[in-house]
Structures are given as C-alpha cells and as structure tokens.
Image (cartoon, rainbow, N blue to C red; front, side):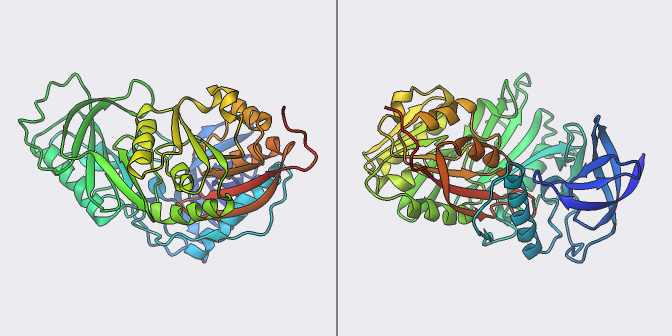
Length: 427
C-alpha cells in the first residue's frame, strides 16, 4: 500500500523522516525536508517503517528534477541544488553529535571540486538474459530487485562508463552467463580496469575468448560478503596508481582507495597540518598507506596497521618506493594489536570503516600514551559515538568536514583531539 506523506527533516543516517496520520515514523531515501511524496512501505518494524520513493508530488525549490532514471540507487540527491546538499550535510553532522550531547566548533563542509564524474570505482549488476544483458544497479534497500543503468552512471568518468558498456557488449556477443557483477576502477590516468565476478563452476577459457580490454581481472565471488575471491584470469596491468604531491602510491585492483581522491587531498593536507613534525605516529586502519605515508616524510617514525594482506603489502611497497624508511606496516586487525605497539605513540591516526572504531580499539587508544588523536570518518554518527567514549581522556581541538560524495547524504568529517589536561596517562 502506498502513502502520500510530507517529510519533516533529514535524520543523521541520511534518510528523510515523515509520520503517517496514525503517528508511525517512516524513513525514506531521496526525499527532502518539506517535500510531499508518494512512498511504498517496504519494511515494517515495531516503532517505524522504511519506505521506497515512488514520486515526489510536491518538490522543494532546491530540486531541479534533472537526474538519471536510476538516481535513487546511486545518488538520491543527484537532482538537488549543490549548495543545499552542503547545507543538509552540515546539519546532519550537527544532529549526529547532538545525539551524544556534544557541541562542535564552527565549521563548514568543503565542497568537492566536481559534483559528477568524481568516483574512481563503479559497480554494476545485470538485468536481462545472457546475450541481452543490461547494466543495472540494485534498488536501494534491496539485494534482489534491480534498475537498469544502460549508459552507466554519471558519478563515474566517461572513460569508465564506456568501459562498462564495452564489457557488457562483449559479454552479450559471447552469450556469457556466468558473470554476476561488473566493477570498473580507474586511477589518476583515468585508465579503466575491468573486474568481472564470475561463478567458478562455469568452465570458460577466458584467454581463448580474447577479451578486447587493456586491463582485466576475472574473479570468483568471495566466500564471505561481496568481496573478490580467487583470480580466474587476468590480462594487462591490474594495479592502480595515484599521487598526492610527491607521494606516489600503487595499489591492487582489490584494495580500498579513497573514492574521490581530489576531494580527499584537501583532508590529507589538513591532517598533515595538524600533526607536528618529528613525532612517533601510529595509523590504525591504515589501508595502502594513503594517510600514513603522507605523514611519514615529516614523522620520527610511523607504524601503519592494516587487516588485509594485500593492502598492507602495498603500504610496505609504497614506503620503499617513496624512500620512507621510517615506515613499518603491521598486518593485524586493529582490535587485536599488542598494546606495546602503542607504547611510544605520540599521535594516533584513525580512518575506520562506516561502523567506526571497534570497542577494543577505543580502549587501546585510551590506554595509550598518545597526546593527539586524528580521526577521519565517513560516518559522523559512529564518529560522534566514538568521540563521546574517547571524551573521558581527550578534548576536541579542531573539526572540519569534506564532501567526498556529492549527490548522496554521505559526508566525511575530520576531528583532531588532544589529551585532556589532568588526565593521568598510563605508566
């Protein structure tokens, strides 16, 4: 059953909130405060419901109406005036910290240099039958329903979308039915790298099919989650490259990398400015070393902790190729590191996934001798939760925000904290 509702506000998780005449709270993506929209309830809980947007019947003045057919799946704010997006994201951060009764200093959300074409990774599924496949995206909130994206997505570059369409056409020409996902990644050169996720029980001779792509990886699905599993075939160079000033980074096709590197560069400069030279720094959730190696040139020593072997290996190789002999990569889940790893830490830098810091990681930071904590987050809700817990020993010193994800309700926030005066450090 569909409902016609007027939405009140955007909540910190990025969804719009409305109430039915009976008082039931309804959350929906893609609606703006003050808009009236027809929505379909797709999930009913005891105290609230989740809905899917059918149509905005009374749009806000900040909505242009110009968006892709599949915009709700990739960027639900795609048709929203960009200045208003930044205003909403600023409010989301304020509300997230307000939930934990924390006041933030005055800050602005630094805009992304580009509102479209900024992503260096696109991921598609398929609609249709073998020989007539079409690029598609999952409907937001569903793992089964899809919406067609025949020309790709405007969040990626023209070269990335052209590569996705070429891969689709090649799969159709050979009536290949084993591929469930298509990922296109690009580095600073905008050279597309195509990744096909193929069910391994299909015995295909990929080399004999002569894929017409400069860089291709065919992988089995991961046994857990949506990751990439065993490599079934590859051709061309399957590594990616990016530079931040003098720092040159190389990383694997399956490694995490900042999705909007141009916007990230601003946050990296702020982190570098916040950390004084000559200190012993430990970076948790270090990845391929993007932040840690950006600090290593001025640091006394730098330890980067990373759970994925491929990323930790890339960090180690990047340190060597950049001549950063004071960098050490440690392969471990952050929550499982030995406390002695932090014995000499003067500064701790963290950039955790959306779920935020593991409780054990918070305790490790509290028990460490570190005087400074730098926390970059892609989720202000979990960052606010973590900083409230860390507030027993640290005081917020500076705060800033960056729009890494135009067209979406997501935002990046950067907090710098200093150990509070009078808080006894561990011996």
